[in-house]
Structure formats: structure tokens, C-alpha cells
Length: 371
Image (tube, rainbow, N blue to C red; front, side, top):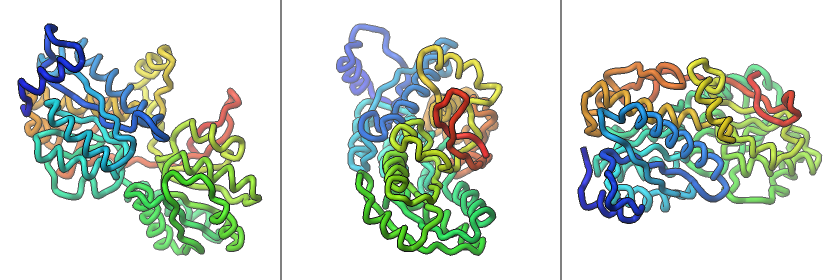
């Protein structure tokens, strides 16, 4: 296993652990722990921390205890590479993360060169696993899969709509928008507008005026919940009644907090809600008892740790390259997401995206429900 005594001792000292029993395997969480996407970072952190605590309580990974370090990438590719280099210095063996594809892709190259395995719960851009790297895995699906689902849905249900395709110019957002556009075009539907915004933008008045002039009746948005929520609210305020459709990047209850009542009717693709799986029920109740709702990527992060530990057990080794080979050869692995197997690229072999719609639940709060 790639690990150095000096880096472990340095990390122990920095965490105030000098003089205590030192854990044998170091996992890291790389995610946006601060900033506009911190809600997703919290999901990845909470899921990984809980899984590691449970594995340690059961005896560890091949008898070795796991410790965890955190890295805040702030959803920024440059910061993500800095975090990746810090993880190398810390002696990390496995990274659970990152959230953004635009961060995961460059960070994974640092990890590949330094013997670190990366298991992302959330990076959906196909490029992440298409470069032939030995170390890239994910427990989520790919944007070409959810783009196909969204595009087919648009072709079936919005064949006569005037559609604006909008994206945030990131590898995730533009990638998903382009793949959805390609799928709906193949289904015989052509957009009337194709526009890019900048992540972090807050005023969409000019874009909305342009969409109104074009008579837009559906907006497909590739990006995250922060900008999507503002766009939804401002569309309603400015009299554009077209619903917004997006992908897994808006799957956070913060979307409703940003958009308000205008969120009703918003649609998005995501996997079948893992909180409803029988094998996840006890864990979901544990999270809720602790005051944390395990939505979106929480259980994907928990499953990421489970899959790595199960592959290590099957390999009889905690060496990261042995684990990588085991992930591809020894599935399916039992996780809170059900059985997961990985192909030679590191993708799961069970693509499963469906369409959701945002509406009020029985508690009066807006959330996403399977259509």
C-alpha cells in the first residue's frame, strides 16, 4: 500500500494524535465542504464518515483500522489539485470524492501517479472513467446515461415544445446539457436556443428576456442547484412559466429554499431514491435520528466506502492496485445501494436513472418525487 511513515506521523501531529494508536489505512474525503455546493460536500462527508465508523467497529479493513482526513476543494479544479497533492503528502490510500466532475478529472491524475484509488459518489461526466486510468471508480451513473433518459423523456412528452438548452460551462453542466441535447435531437426534437451562463451568476434577466422573446416553453439546464434555483425563481418573477428540467446536480432540498414555490413542476433525472431500498432502511433511520437527512449522495458515499472495503476483503489485501483489480473482477458487492459491480473502466454496470418532479409532500415541504 502506498503510505509513508513520515507523512503518517506528520498527519498524526497535525491532528493532535501523536502518542495514540495510529490507524493503518488512511481514507480521505475530497469535496466542497464550504461554498455554494457545501450541501453536497456534507452528504459525501457524512456518508463516508459513517461507513468508516461502521467498518472500524466491525474490525476494520482486513483487520486494519481506517482513519479519515478531509479536503475542501470548494468545487474549484485548481483547489481540487491542491487538495489532491495534500492527500499525497498525508499518505492517503483511498479518496472518496470528488463531487464535481471538473474537480475529479484533474485530481484523479494526481492520484493515479501516486498510487491512490479514487471512488467518486457523484462525478458523472463520462471522461472521468474514459482515460484508461487504473484508479478511477464511481458508485453513480454517467451523464451519457442520464442524458439519454432526459432526451428520450423530452422527445416523448415535449415533442412540440420550444426548448432552451442552458448550461453553466462546466464539464458536468455543459457535458450533461450536450448529451441531453444529442438524445432529444435524435428523438426528433430541436432546441430553439442554446446558451451558457457562468457558475456563480445571480442575475438571469437578460437570458430570461431572450427566452421569452423566443417563446420558450421548456428549459433544460445543465448545472447545479444554486444557479438553477435562482433561474427558476427569476423566471417565475418575470412571467416565464416554462418548467425547468435538469439532472442530478439539482438534487438537494436547498433548491426549494432558493426557488420558493416556483420550484413546483421542476423535473430532474436521478437514480431511484436509495433511501427507499430495504437494505438502507436501518442506516437511513440512524442518520435521521442524528438529525441529518441522507438525501442525494449520502448513501452513494457510504456505498463507495463499502465497495472499497469489500473489494479489499475479496483481494485479501489493502494494496490500492490490488483493490482496483478486485473491484473489477470480484463483484457484485453488497452495499446500501444494493449489489454493485464495476466494469473495466470503473463504472457501475447498473445504470438506473429515472425522472423526478418537484412538488409538495404530505409535510407541506417541496421535494423531488418519482414521476
